[in-house]
Length: 167
Image (cartoon, rainbow, N blue to C red; front, side):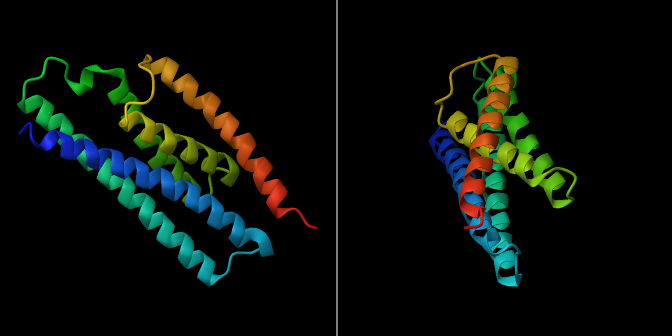
């Protein structure tokens, strides 16, 4: 059972990396698609492929995270994942990404805010799965996410403004 842990950690990091990479790619493709002011059928098909890539990354991340929880339970490790704030923060990020993606597909949230939330959440998930985020409490992690989302919102909006402005 312990031999599966490095493989599962790799799969978790791969899913998070794939999702973060697809979030960046989707921003680039969206801006390129909007240069002419409308999204045509070919551009829509390309964006659908990106959505499938994001779905694959999330599925791989969640399945490997669940398998890690089961393996930790079977190995009877003293610190179970459900007792750590980083585990609950990663679950919150996954639910936030899924919820905001659903809201974007139903057009109940603005694209600018939704894409900033998804973008920053994917990168937080990636760094969290690599163990590169500092050990913070759940509230401090959420506050850091809110601040990062605000910064990404401003950065993405400014970059869209520069790229899409009429010359």
